[in-house]
Image (cartoon, rainbow, N blue to C red):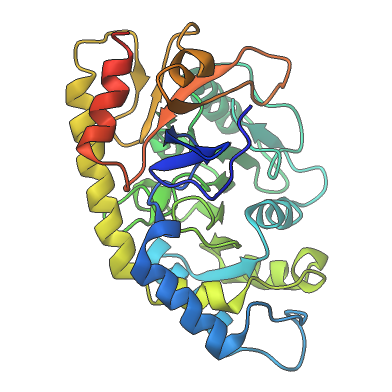
Length: 344
């Protein structure tokens, strides 16, 4: 385990020694983008760092509704509810599920949206089984499908086209924390590739802290009534709202996010070319995540002054997953050094 002296970017300092950093989830590297930080500072000047008030108070900052409108437009949904974090967003989402509703958990559901055990099948097998089960039964209330949009630990982006085959009304709760800000032309996440059918209601829950670097969560709903229901929950009313300074920065940084996404995509393309001769590296072309064999662990890379992501998850006693996570701050030289390390 590495104890870092400062917030990492393309590098990190450990005991005052600078190492290349290929870990974490700051995909767009926003914490080191000067213009973004200037927006944060301006937000602090206008609103302060914290707005210690309930979201149901009779005194509200219009900044929150402005941000919710921006997120609804981005995800093309009816309404969005801002939350304190991605975890509280997930918990508030599953609280909307009626009692005795039939639940279908995908192979990977973040604990924020998990109610029962996840499926042990491969995603495609689970999808086929779910379609078959739902179509063969009649339900008093719409069954609920729960899934993450991707599995960043195995470099998979899930295909939800199977939903087109479901005939009756369903509700899909999807955690898009690692897709939001990363996937899509405008960083809209998984929303743009979900089937649009009248019988499907979507509740997309996500953190804004990964790609966007905003300590907040949100729930984008295809049904406005669901958003209203969430606003009547304790998860919404009893938590301190996100920092207004950070939301101000988010609202004024959409062009910066786009520029950083373009840079990240160039980095991914360049590293894919460098890794082309290695057939045992697992990756998805849309994700800045590259998974190595077991022997390429943190100790292997640390000897070459490189930090990678290497830990067991979700079972801390399980086998470690060794991954290099690149971000928009990395230079070509950084990526060459990462690829060259595999030749050591």
